[in-house]
Image 1 (cartoon, rainbow, N blue to C red):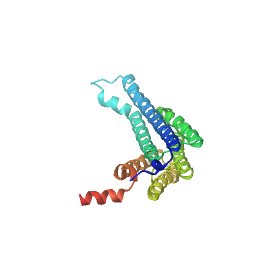
Image 2: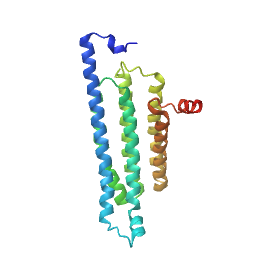
Image 3: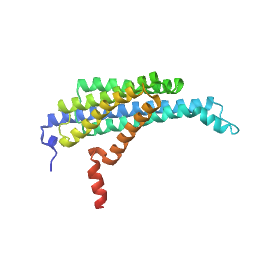
Image 4: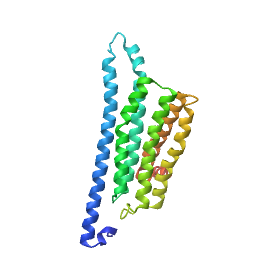
Length: 231
């Protein structure tokens, strides 16, 4: 069975291949940006550990002192890893690019590279209401950009030739919209309890990670369970 784009004229086929290479380059650039951001966060933790003067005689006291930094770094790593997976699933189905997609993608990468800064504020100032509002707002912007990119890709016809079922388009849009709806509630929770707000944020992205792990590229958790049962 020939793929849809294999039926095109040679000139059209060559144009489509160039577009697919451009999409792959964007995905590679995003992977690099996410990796750099995560590496900077790990370096923050390493730097704080070294500067704390960790010794065998005061090991547990030093670990207790490092706990806020460790929590902030682990939360940010969880968020960045999950957002990269969502981005990776999107670009798994994209076959074309556009000017609007380039713009949204550029803004997304800038927001990603600023996550280490928000992380530094979180562990330097502590888990307070104002810091959680700032941090949650940053995460909200990440998910919003991912949603806008997917919405533009679907409406702009950037999935041409990838044979994406409507259910996959719906599922990815649904989980991104769910995050957009839940995050303002988490932000509001920070005014009552900053610790509870941070816990809710971790729970949201842990659920995201489970859904992605179970559902794979189709985000079909139920079918994955049925398949395992049959095996």
